[in-house]
Amino acid sequence: MSYQTAQPDSALPSGGALGRASWLASRIGSVSRRGLLRAAGASVAVVGGGGLLEGFSFSGKGASDGSASGSTPGLVIGPSGDTTGATDTAAINAVAGAGGTALLTNGTYYVTHLLPGSSGAIIGTGPNTLLQAVSGTTGYAIALKTPASTQQIMLAGFTLKPNTGTLGGILIDNTGYGTSSDSQHTLENIYILDAGADAFHFGANARSMRVTNCRQYNAVGAGFWLEAGCTDSAFTGCISGPSTQYAWNVAGWNNFFTSCKGFYAGWNGSVFDTSHSAWEITGDYNTFASCSAQNGALHGFNLNGCSNVAMAGCCADVNNSGGSSGVGINTQVALNCTIVGCTGDNHGGTGQLYGLQVAGTQTNTTFFANTVTGSTAAFNYVSGDGYLLIGPNVEAKVSGTGLLVKEGANRKQGTAVLAAGTATVADTAVTASSRIFLTSQADGGTPGFLRVSARTPGTSFAITSSSGTDTSIVAYEIFETG
Image 1 (cartoon, helix red, strand yellow):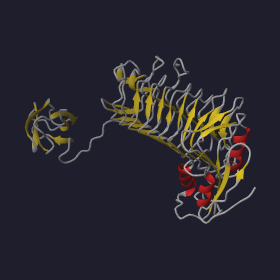
Image 2 (cartoon, one colour):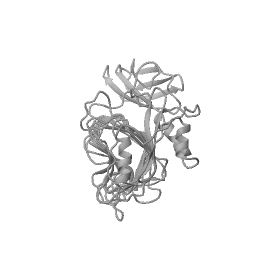
Image 3 (cartoon, rainbow, N blue to C red):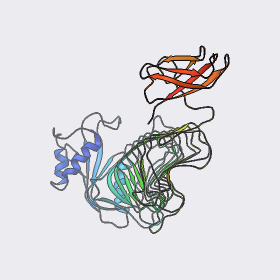
Image 4 (cartoon, rainbow, N blue to C red):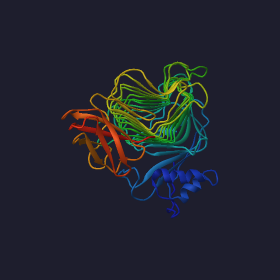
């Protein structure tokens, strides 16, 4: 094997391994790869056998992955055409497994188990970089080389087809967490098609990941599964299409989901079941913003025994596709959860029965300003208490709590003391249409029945008792018409 070098080109972009690899990828095919790499200041090697392999090592300091090395080793790899999977798998693992960047051109790569090591990357040029799993492969098509210690891998820009038997898509599983920092893996722009198990599976201690614009279609298992212990990760713009199980199974904690969608959960390719929701949320301290649930076999979002979950601006449409008892958003024994500003309906059909539903005793769970509807009603109470519902009605079903109104000058609630059966209350909050409610708090003199005998909008109102010797303390409450 021979090596040739050239001086770095000032036109080579910065931005770390991914930025440089993307720049190279955009130019592959327009010029020879060997010439391109030489122009970029790379060490070049041509390896015989299946496909063209060209090695590169970018010069300069400050590798983006924080490694001590002043260069980022990598390899441009073309598909070999070897349908056994041996050649492409070995070529990719030789680079990514050693912590380098395997840059894949367009074409079909036949693979078995791809195992990136710490700081390793597998980067395609887009959807036309296809990783086709070979029949007989089991487990997951892509997993970590050493789950106990592998950190900061990057997977980006390819289509993965693990459509052989029970083979899953991608497994990120740092079950042996104990290294000096979080694993911090990155997944971007990946499409998994026809997984024989879960498409994306994130195990315990897979921490501080960034998963962006990833999607799956037709998983036999779950679309995205976050095990308990999968924490502190951000999912943005990810979509789960048809899946036999949950679109999103979120048992992990402290994760963030933005503009993600799950649809056709519980669909086996011919019929829906009656048990899988688009989003099954059992983990604590998770946040969901502008996420969507559509055509889930059961519920859209099922907050099931979780705590401190926040949902804002989410949409639940046409769920209950299995035709059982599904609703848009269901809370089952939820603790300190907040559901605010969510929407969704059936688009004129007969899908989800209710927009919101509470089942079992909640604790300090709040529903505020939601417009989710169903074919039967917007809200359904099954059992329990411990929640606050505001809009379209106000329900305070938390023991020991209720409506709190500040008292004092010019406020909507207060007290007055009658003298000889009358009192004038100075209050700028009173209007011509105010509904003023009166009740005695402490009897004095000879109590009588009470009435509002006069009002001056913006100034005051008068209270009069039927008894001229009434000196009671009277409470008042002012409401306005809607």
